[in-house]
Image (cartoon, rainbow, N blue to C red; front, side, top):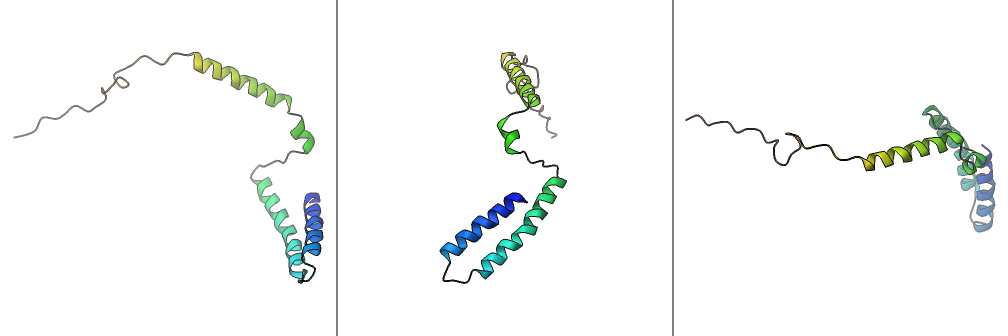
Length: 105
């Protein structure tokens, strides 16, 4: 909610500066209507499982994410070092065509 209030304050100041001659009542009303929409959008996102990170959390990655990145890097190395599987009847070149049926005469 704090960031919405900051947004409204900045936009109201900009509208007051740039649209002095025109009526800014409609624009201010639109800014005020955007508040409940902002809250509704945040509520829906929270219900879908979204969790916002604070600036502090974004600056310092968590230890669990470092660990998972290391595990992922190791698994990528293992995958690139493995050899491809040996060819089989299904994977060899052109061997998986169905057998043709003999025509009746």
